[in-house]
Structure formats: structure tokens, C-alpha cells
View (tube, rainbow, N blue to C red):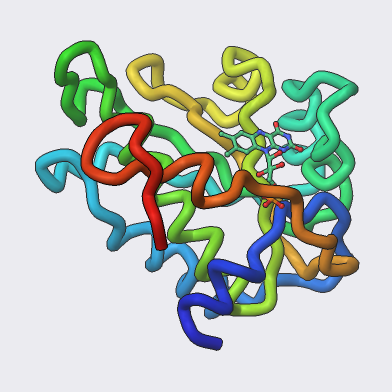
Length: 180
Ligand SMILES: Cc1cc2nc3c(=O)[nH]c(=O)nc-3n(C[C@H](O)[C@H](O)[C@H](O)COP(=O)(O)O)c2cc1C
């Protein structure tokens, strides 16, 4: 699969088969996150791999019942990965906190690698961080930026709509249409 096929094919997966994720595949996917770019290469991230069903269940209690990824986290996906980041170990410029960008880049690399390996993921950010921190025993200085289930997708969902390029790309200055 080439890079564009991966970019086009990745979907948020919320239904999983019970099949396990081989340890070597998991290591490859985590390594894709490890090599992500970051502010001053400070690599403010940590990843917690959760495979214990009881802990996944407790972690799922941090999600509101309305979160569409709840079942995936609680019982379907064999693996859940928690993305943690230390804001002090990244930069702030003009009020922009780059730890979120650093962490997001690493997670996205993980997700694209997972897709290339035939696995599904889903960003999950709608959860009670304090509850998640307690379940995962995360130190105070770290933020839990997001979670993802990881496993074999039950099916490949159809693509969600996206804005057209003409709606999001300008030429030279704000508002001038970009002609392709
Ligand atoms: C920062 C962020 C937070 C998200 N949080 C959740 C979430 O809590 N629960 C969920 O089911 N999906 C969540 N999503 C997934 C989005 O709904 C999804 O990416 C979007 O609808 C586009 O669909 P696609 O990923 O299949 O292309 C989140 C995505 C991002 C980028």
C-alpha cells in the first residue's frame, strides 16, 4: 500500500473483531509514533498500551455513554492505547501550546501505520481526563490527550464527507481563490 492509499483509506473504526494484535505488529505501530516530529525534538509523549480487559472496562467508564467509541474501548478492541503528553516538555509560542500538536502528530503516525497493517483505530478525546488518569496511574504533570482502540476492523466504513479544496485553500493571501 502506498502512502496515498493509506491516507485515503484510514477511517475511524468503532466496531472490532475479537482477533488479537500480534506483538510484533504492535511494536511496529508504536515505532511509527516514536519517530514523529515534535517541538525542538523534545518528544513530550508517552503511550500506555492497555490490554487487560478489566482495565479497559474501567477506562471506558471515563467516556460518556454517548461517545460512539464506548463499546470499542470497553469490550471490542483487544488493545487500547492512551496518548499522554507533558506540556512542560514542549513549547508555547504566542499562546499556542505545541504539546497538543506534538502528541497529535505522533498519534496520527500510529494510526496510519495501524491502517497499513490492516488494523483500525479511532481518535477518542471525549472522556473524563481525571478518571482516565486515575485508572492508568498517570503522573500529575502529564495530560491524557487521547485514546484509541486498536484491532481488526469489523468492516471498512464509508468515507465521511470533507470540505472541497476550493473551500479551504487560498492563493497568496486570505480569501483569493486558488485555481488548480
Ligand atoms: C481530536 C479528535 C477527537 C475525536 N474524538 C472522538 C471521540 O471521542 N469519539 C469518537 O467516536 N470519535 C472521535 N473522533 C473521530 C472523528 O469523529 C472522526 O475522525 C471524523 O468524524 C472523521 O471521520 P474519519 O476519521 O473516519 O475520517 C475524534 C477525532 C479527532 C481528530
